[in-house]
Image (tube, rainbow, N blue to C red; front, side, top):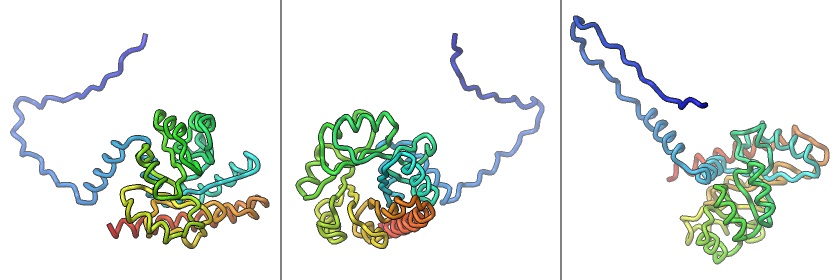
Length: 254
C-alpha cells in the first residue's frame, strides 16, 4: 500500500524568557533578480507548445538535418548540438532531453503520430494539413505548417496554427518577402525556410522572422557524404552565434 506523500514545516518555539529580538532587516531584491524571478515564473506557466515556441524564438535557428542512415543522422546532430544549436529536426530525445527536438518532413497523420510517440516537441510540414494540426494540438505538440501566400498564412492561423513556416522563402523574395508579410500579419509568428545561406540568418530575423531553418548551410552535402563532423560543428557554431546575436538585437529594438 502506497503512503501518501506530505510536506511538513517544523517551527521551533523560542525560550519563554528570551528577550525580545528586533525584527530582521530585509534587503529588497535587486532589479536583475526580480527580472530573473519573473522570467522563471513566466516560463513555468507556459504550456508545452508555448515553451517550444519560446525556445525556437530565443534560439533563432532551426537546424534541419537529412541523412541516409540513422547512424549518420545521430552523429551529425550531436556535432550540431555540441556546437550550440539547440533546435534540431531529429530524434535524439533520450540523449539530449533539454534540447528542442522535432521531426520533419511530416506529410500525413500517421507520420505525425509516429513522431509524437517518439517524443518530438514539434512537427514541421511543407504545407497545411488539418489532420496533422488537429492531432498535434490534441497531444500538446507544436505543429509548424508550411505556407506561401497571405491567404495560406491567415487560413493556417485561423485553423489554430501558433507559428507558420514561410516556404519556399528564397524563391518568393527572401528577406523582402518576410518583411512584406509581417506588415499585415505582425501578430503571426513566422519561420523562414528554404535555401537560406549562413550569412543571411540574422537579416531574416531582423526583417521579422521568428527563426530561420538552416539545412545545407550547416549540414552541407559534402560534409554529410564524408561524415565531416568538424565542418558541421564549425558551421553550427557560427549559426548559433548569429542566431543569438540577431535575437538579442531584436529584443533591444522592442
